[in-house]
Length: 199
Length: 157
Picture: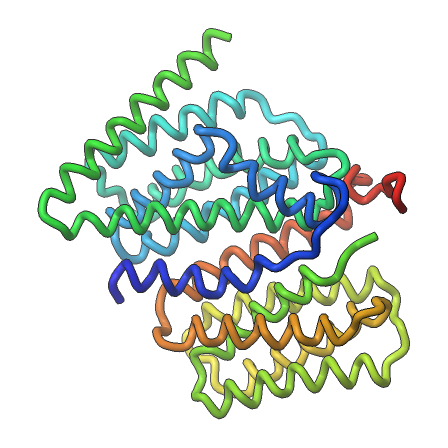
């Protein structure tokens, strides 16, 4: 199946998840929780770039990682979110998040073809950091179920966006363009990391 | 108060994922069984303890997500899972006023998801199943966490 079809197939069932009742108070209740959760990965450039990079790297690596990475990441992200919601402290997760952008961008830029277990392990560790941040930043008035559905769905859709970008590899000049994008992501990640370390 | 609409939608999405790759007769039978099970539960079953129903619902979502990854599913298991999803959806909707709306949500989401998963038994349903499993695992765990602020009533409740 072509990547474009994959993206369409992933979006179609996911569209079954989007109808939620409106709530009068923004950020509260189920709908508010869903909106808050959905917006959370999109609101931070570090989260956004890392999620897209996971999809992009998976697309670059091909089967089975093209679908394994978008499965591993949400699963481990949820583990991190549980830890965050439980109030357990994990040190340096912010640095882990910034590092994820740099490392994943670097993997794309260097066209790194890692074995399945290494790629999955790298993604799993970073997913815990991202999930922890989502869990810790659950708005106090938001419905946790709506929030969790929101941020998992947003994360998954960003992975799909990365996979869609990865489909450009098949086009003329696609691979250099993707590697250039990876380099840009890694550079931005480096700036983020520097800022986090110097704080 | 926990709104069951989203969980009913997740149940329907899981049902659609397991039914989609089946032959159209099995898909139709499964979708119909799911809707009928929900209607039967609403009509004949008295309200059950909410915590138990919600826990069972998350278990069914997780089971459907895992079933999506199984190589050889047959026709019976997807239909049984869809039926379970409908029955649990009915249990979740038993205490809400607009029950037919939830039946419609179940029906529509099941059909849409089954249609999306139907053509190619390949990557996309498995990825979406991963998302469902992650959501189910997180929400099942929430029940054993310390009180999360989100479930405390606000001034409107």
